[in-house]
Amino acid sequence: MDWIALILLALVQGITEFLPISSSAHLILFPMLFGADDQGLGIDVALHAGTLIAVMAYFRTETAQLFRGGVQLVQPGARGADRDLALQVAVATVPVVIAGLLLRDLVANELRSVTVIATTTIVFGLLLGVADRRGRDERSTPVDLRIALLIGLAQTLALVPGTSRSGITITAALLLGLARPEAARFALLLAIPTTAAATLLGGYEIARGSAGFAADPLEALVAAGLAMVSAYIAIAWLMRFVRRASFMPFVWYRLALGAVLFGWLWTGV
Image (tube, rainbow, N blue to C red; front, side, top):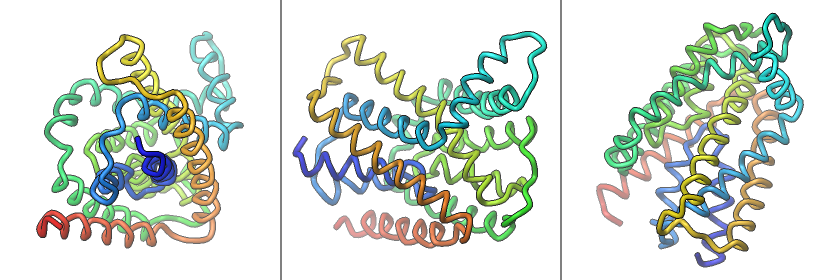
């Protein structure tokens, strides 16, 4: 890729991956605005790896809890906060894994259109606005297995491009009674297994030697590094922002972005 396009792509991916504004909507705009070709699976894997490192680094305490809790899940009789968190994240992740396996071809071939992405950007942006109106600022409903499962079921909608994985999980969490900071925290924790799965799957395809998946090592390293730094900054900013403000700026942004996509679709400009 052209170096300027690569840098911009990495920054767009890093910034939009964890904000509730749909990274896929921005990535479809990217070649339209900059005339860049598809970056290929090698760069995709590098970008996912960078964002994975960012979310694990920011939530390093929770990441350590997940690892300890994962071990405890296979230990009979184990109890504690680490195990509870790992079980909640696992329960919330299973639905999207199953749906992803069943609907992979449909998502890849039928749903990646500007019309779909523009529509979901607006519709789920409005739904986030409704949920935000009901969101709590201080008191928060504790996350239990029922709430984790419901958030996980909502996360399956993120398979449809334009929905935003963080957006739909935050929306579900708010509707289920979580305060804004806790909704954002749990939504971003769910990114750890899903992003790790996407990285490992892409890595497997590359290791298998599928044609067209190669990437220049330096380009991949730069992409991963920029995505990591920009994603970390975006996560840190988001977590500070939701402690003192609502999600409504993201709602208005999504509505504007959806309008731009529909405008481009209708005018062909």
